[in-house]
Length: 555
Ligand code: N01
Image (cartoon, rainbow, N blue to C red):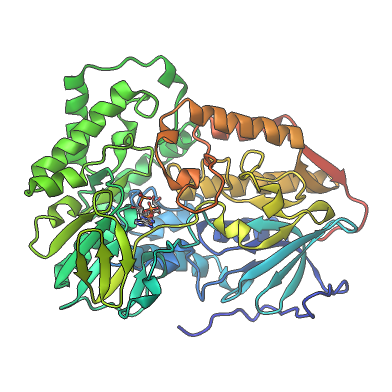
């Protein structure tokens, strides 16, 4: 793709110098995915001078990079859309119930054009460091292209699923064929025809890619460490009437977002009854037929009580056994070591059916571990599997990966790596004590990846824009969380998670997929998160500390 690096004036100085005469920006926004684009739009709207920095050559965030076959969203398209512009809703039509990546990328590209956001963004540019200067209360943001930007606010919209994880498996460097990662997929179509393809990983990405690859490959060998719960999407075309109906209910939907607890634990969870098994079974059957991941809505206590969750697990295992003809393969595909929903539930198009194809083999790594990769394939404890291509569908260094990949330094030069050595610490997932004027869109300690990430991004951006306006009105220069408020919030995040079944799985929510990463449950799964944020603001930003402006304004 042609470079789209913006013509926005470039500020380049030697790497260790700061050009104190350079223009001071209102804000730098890092990342041009859904969160970053909306932040650029809103910050410009309130009159801030703002520059976006994006590593990719175009907008889209994780949707720019994840181009593997079969990739589509597991949230229905009508909901996986920005909610803030009636004009945008009126002019955009989704073609399918669950949009494919290409259509989502077209949508976000359309938004960037429609709202003239591209000129604000420096593409193909990666932020390497962001340093807070105690003396003048400004951030200095440096990039791999030599940019040195000074800004009052630093908005990290770096995404929760943007740093791919490739496990360090012995011998992988010896493999002679192409090695692909679902999260760094080539732009050119990949031809699997006549190829023996190995796929490592059976999370959402693997579960979507495997059926598509199997349609053309000579043979697909799936290397599975942990089987997953997956629901059929029942994807299909959307009609004009679907859009009209959605729009008619839009106000109610917006209102419901204030209380939306999808994948979270509502207050009624503690006292909700456990419905009889046959009643639950019928409800799960209805949801299976309807398609999508709404099983997590089935009962308020499905994520807190084994008496409910176990029946849902049995139900899905029953569906797997009904679908997969080979009994051993069916058993190997049945998840047994974690409750349903405590890893992100998968939504598929013919995943379990794919294992009835003669050209697909499942290798259960729990029974038959990989010993090493070789020049020609994979050596497990039992056999040598000959392969022409390898696909890693092994996920991400989630939630904190992109933030910690930059050298972020707050007050007194303290690094974020140091501040988060024992796990991420934030107040409301929005800010970090000791890092003034730094905001984390869908940061750890917020619902972030739970539910609909776009609405979570919008909520954070709207909240921080209100906060910035509050500061402007009051002549306030810096904002940062109080250490005690942050401690209390993190205790609350952990306490809420401990009342659920979430900690029972080795999921990326806990960071355990990355060697050496502290085991901390990162998303906030409690109820009433939006209410908590609104209350903090309404009460005068309790738990945040402000400093008064001493010098000129940056507006
Ligand atoms: O990654 P994952 P993902 N040897 O971490 C396995 C979103 N998403 O890219 O479970 C062998 O879930 C690992 O095994 P285990 C969505 O939020 C959304 O699939 O750790 N296997 C697991 O099977 C999702 O949750 C959409 O034992 C190894 C797999 O690799 C998130 O992204 C689409 C291994 C990784 O699964 C991440 O999904 C795609 C090793 N050394 C993604 N290391 C939609 O909207 C890891 N694995 C539909």
